[in-house]
Image 1 (cartoon, rainbow, N blue to C red):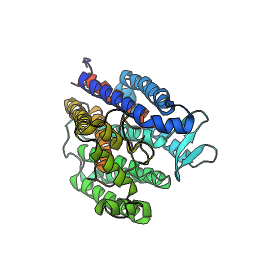
Image 2 (cartoon, rainbow, N blue to C red):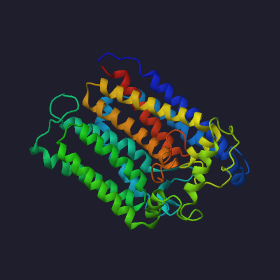
Image 3 (cartoon, rainbow, N blue to C red):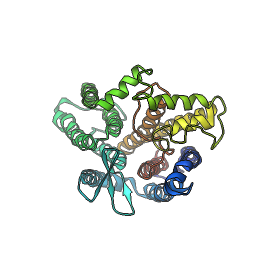
Image 4 (cartoon, rainbow, N blue to C red):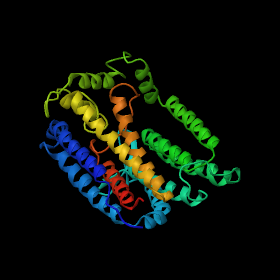
Amino acid sequence: MKDRRPDYVLAGVVIALVVFGVLILSSVSAPISQEKFGTTFYFLNHQLLFGLLPGLILALFAFKIRLEILKKWAPILLLINMILLAMVFLPKIGAEAGGAARWIDLGKITFQPSEFLKVTFILYLAAWFSSRTPGQQKFGRGWTEKGFGQTLIAFLTVVGLISLLLIYQPDISTLGIIFLVAALMYFLAGTILWHSILIILIGTGGIFSLIKLAPYRANRLLVFLEPETDPMGIGYQIKHILIAVGSGGISGLGLGMSHLRLGLIPQSISDSIFAILAEEAGFIGSCLLILLFLIFLWRGFKIGKLCQNKFSQLAAIGITSWITVQAFMNIGSMIGILPLVGIPLPFISYGGSAMVSELIGVGILLNISKNAT
């Protein structure tokens, strides 16, 4: 196969998103950083040193590695990731924050295994489905009822095991992203249509059961349906998020001029960072960010469409779907068209593990683009 140049448009979009993220994080994190650590640059420096720098190094590795090797090692990578996911519950190794056990603490290095699960599970599914899809046809229904035990049951077993690990953390938002992307990949792998319908029904029922079992999740849904509910209690966060988004107007207040970044919005440097971005960059800046994610979606799906290799095809679609679905779920929850979800905005939110995993995904996408025919 003759190598082509990687997709420079995709690379340019990601560079723009990362720069956008660094600029807005430097503004949002400054007062919080000053209050907690006596310097305005603590969170920014941490993101650069433990997120962007290792992310770029691993993205370069993902860009250079042969895709055949990546496919071969995909099951091992997922197994290692699941072991790490289970290790968050171990004393002295796992770390808790906000009532959730999601981190592994190795002293100077703390990371979140569930963030890396997004990319390792996508690679595993791409490798698994490509080895079982009959022929070399593109997306289409080609599987038979004979493969029921090897496809649907096996798929639900793996997803179920991952779900249990994430539910016990708990990290339901990450579970939702992983389930949506996995269901899409299952459908696009050419499996039987009713399998996908059953998977969606099981997933929908599971999510509603989890919402019903946890009061804080039910409260998020209640506030979404009735925004005026308890504005100083369970509705406090979304109320101030919407105030921040509306305060930006057309052109925004300017970088560093946000009034609500001073502790009025919970998780302002991570899950709620889009609200501060909208306040400082306004409608124009927010639309620019959304446009960048739309271009990312277009280029990622175009890469997948050009691939003749099934593994590359599914991996490209999976990675693109993961990043864009997560981005639009985060933005949608910030503007009130979706319930609040506790997931970071890709390339923008503070969080080293998320940044590293997203850049690895981009490296794989660019690798696939240069080898697409």
